[in-house]
Image (cartoon, rainbow, N blue to C red; front, side, top):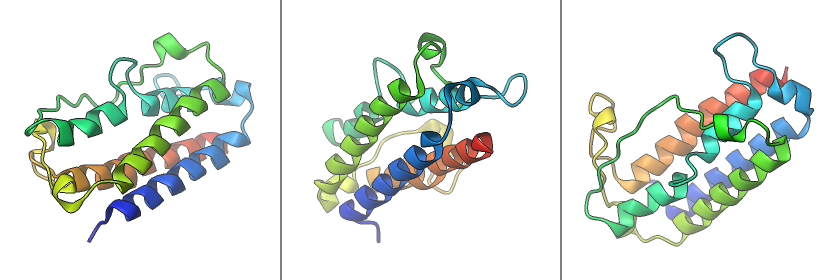
Length: 158
């Protein structure tokens, strides 16, 4: 069973992983895409920070604040165009703040809150189904989405 505290602990580990990986990169390497059409490390970080108007945390809160909110998930958007002149540290700081905040927020939730659902049509054909609980959504974001991008950053750091 996934607990609120375990979600926080997992999130903290992922933040630490990201910091360890990008901490050793210089700006030139972090700005260089491995091939045309592929993301550089700074673009990956920009994607993880999310939209200016509705970050990852804002979307997570909707599970608790609204009755079965609908999520129009659009994968593969980096939000990099408006951030391309930012340094690695300028991208890492909001990511760390956002994800640490999410971890702390998740740790304070009770079982009923973690069991609240959202409607995510994109997930209809996945094991989560189109009505994941907050616990399922957070676990998937931490252990699949975030983990995939951490692996992408590791490859870019080579």
